[in-house]
Amino acid sequence: MLLAKLNHEENIILQKAVSLATQLGVNIYLVGGTFRDVLLNQTGFDLDLVVEGNALNFAKILNLDLLGVIKIHENFLSAKISFTNLSLDVHTARKEVYQYYGALPKIEQGSIIDDLYRRDFTVNAIALDLKNNTIIDPFGGQKDLNNRLLRTLHKDSFKEDPTRIIRAARYASRLEFDLESITKSKLLEVVSYIDFVSASRLKNEYIKIINEDKHYKILQLLNEWGVLPYFLPGIYGESLNITNEKHINLKGSNNERISVWLVNLMVLYWQGAINIKDIHKVRFNFTNKELSCIEWLVENYYFLKHLQKNDFKASLLELHQLLYNTPRETDFFLLWLLRGKSNFYFQDIKNARQKIKLPLNGRDLLKLGIKPGPVMGKIITDLKRQVLVGKINSKDDAVTWLKRMMNDYVNQLDS
Ligand code: ATP
Ligand code: MG
View 1: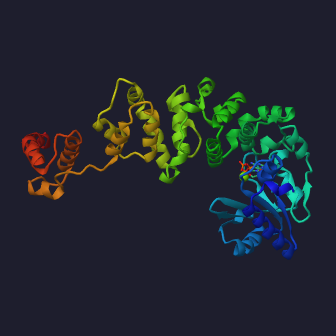
View 2: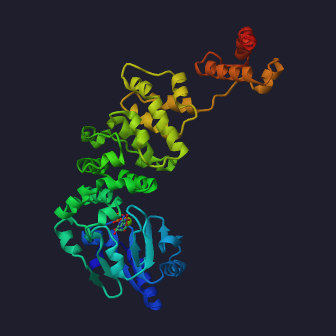
């Protein structure tokens, strides 16, 4: 009855998990977001299971039957089994010990109650005992669910793990819940503890926000709570009052393997920063590729502003220079920026991206008496430009051009 909302495939997986648990003599529970959403009458979620015992063995044996793709996380005593349109997390019931605020906790095997106690909010700390079909709700989660409240399990919860502050904004927006009043005052007290969270955890939280439909609402809430200076420095409140329409939606382009979150971060700073350079202060431990997008945005700020104007259209050469050796994310930022402009820009950007075919190669240049070195490099760069602006269309054009230019190059070499 409780699980009527789950689809056929999900029910079969749960049946198989329960019969394996019976065989192995371990207890098994449906937990976390999955059971919360079941109780909220929502559909379409991934399954989250907790086993009182070794979840790694359990998942491995279960998958002999399910035949999904299994990934084991030894450190977290958990496993993920993925299918085409569904995934199943199997966790070992665990106890967590925080060695310092903001750190990842030390993990030990524990009971289902221990496991529920380590969770962020009471509404996420309800379990369904799948063998006995009974609800385990030690912290009053169902009551909070009915009153649509987010309540932490203990007073140091946000201090212990400040990412819960960001999670609170995510749930409050998605589920349309309020923060219970003590929870809210505790949250507001420790906003600055976000400084203790590692860069990679912060970045993960940002990516989770961006993947939500109501990401703007989440950012607005974080702004209201005074979290943004710690999380996205430089973004100021008023800029977040803009509508979703202005935000980029790249959901359909995932197969391009671009980082949607990164394009969105660029857009966010474009729209919202007092000073675009503040994007450098974001503490996400950027990779080199990510950094080059950010530097690109800052360096080309004025040109991009110009480009955005209706009376200005960049030449192919300018686009080429703008996009030379930059990651694909910069194209998507540009497409977003120019979305109101005529769409032949799209073709131009594609053209600017293509490797320019040179009518003369290195060997041809050698034959013409040009030795490898800086001059040859300069000739190739200039040749590219001539091709891009359409002044050279054939090998003959190129040779004529080069002969005419030769004196200049030789003089440059002398000086
Ligand atoms: P979603 O619907 O976004 O998947 P979820 O509630 O399933 O939300 P997950 O991030 O998938 O959230 O985490 C699964 C569960 O693990 C949560 O329901 C919560 O109980 C617990 N959890 C996750 N992160 C934390 C955290 N930082 N502190 C405490 N509990 C957490
Ligand atoms: Mg989840």
